[in-house]
Image 1 (cartoon, rainbow, N blue to C red):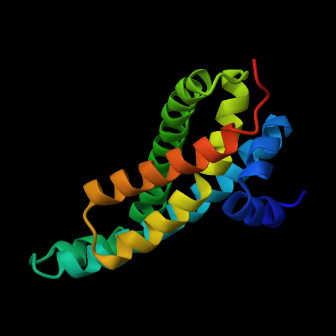
Image 2 (cartoon, one colour):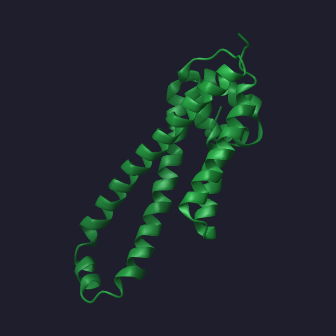
Image 3 (spheres, rainbow, N blue to C red):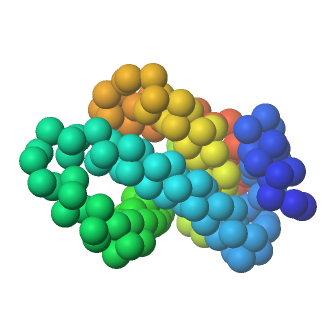
Length: 165
């Protein structure tokens, strides 16, 4: 399947999300890093526009930064890419751990690696919504709670297609 097909199926079909647990880990990581790249790029654009707006009130800082843009911006992008990768992988891992409890409650069979892959695809809709919520003015706490709840719902719907014990 192409990444576009995976994206559309992970938004619309929990049964396919459950089936994605059988995909090779390379395809799953490629999909996750696509989101990491998109989120890093959006974060970098937000950094550039926010930095220009915030630094205009400090005398001399804007002139100093304009002389160092060639090193500041690539370094900032690399740091944002690393932090976004770390944050997304931690969130997927924690949600997969919660998914293991959901499996036990529903008396289903599954390994952590399969639940992790399913969670990576179940986290698609919360990730897309968090991008929109960020620009809507919601606070980070509300965004985190809403996206976590949506991910748990998608994960619960997908895990019901796992085999029974």
